Length: 65
Image 1: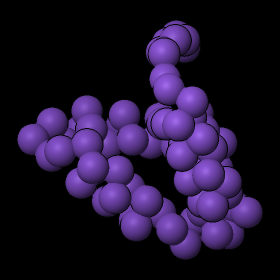
Image 2: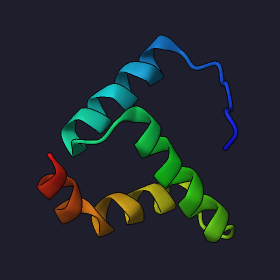
Image 3: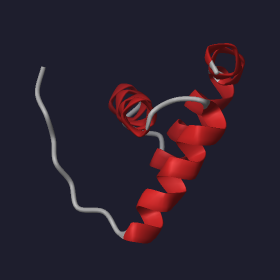
């Protein structure tokens, strides 16, 4: 497995932390889900892909929390 490092603004990091907390997943899991969906659906916009993943797995996230 590889590691990727990115620079992100404090505001975006806070938003990611809040979103991940609300979904009961780690920031890393949230980002990985988004990346996987984006790669698998290259024609979709990132926002659409992220919404799809979150909605599709909402019940799972709640059970894992």
